[in-house]
Image (cartoon, rainbow, N blue to C red; front, side, top):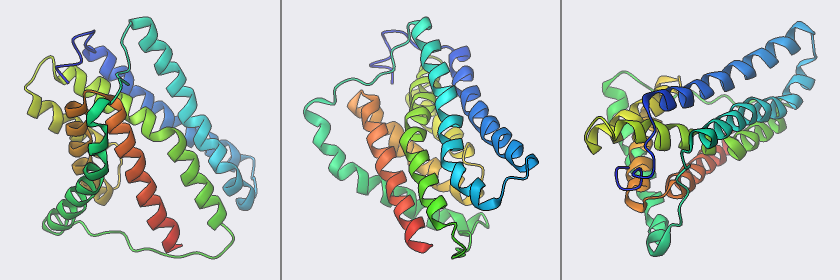
Length: 224
């Protein structure tokens, strides 16, 4: 993002603060769930509350991070897409094909296989759907700021563009914990980074990220 980071480039500290916000989000979610389990909240109630837990866990660090960036004078990078915005119509399927085909080809070589889907009909399906919707509402926004604006923005100041793209994509993949998901999201991270750089706007990465998550969640819900 060398072209549009000239305003004020994120520092290493800014990138670390961004990554820490994701750790805080995970910690808040685990802490809330643990507290409810300690209170012996019924499983049905826990599943019902889980979407709210997701929103709280994501919203709190997002708000704190936005306030931090405002104090630091670091713009988020959501500039107008301009005349090239329509290219997102073909960039999305290409990104999905790139990440999906790459994961399908590389995964078996690394001994990674997709997790077996197990359908459940114990009344928890609605909770799963609401949880996915709750994550979709905030998750991509926070992740794009962290990985494409802060991490890639910082790497641009110390390394070539290729290193920035691949480095931020690797961290993006690692943040998704499950090995099969790491591979797909890491490759998707490359596509998101390239799109963000080409459009010179974080809107490009956010739109592709949102659409990708929506597609994945439709597949997950369809498999329930």
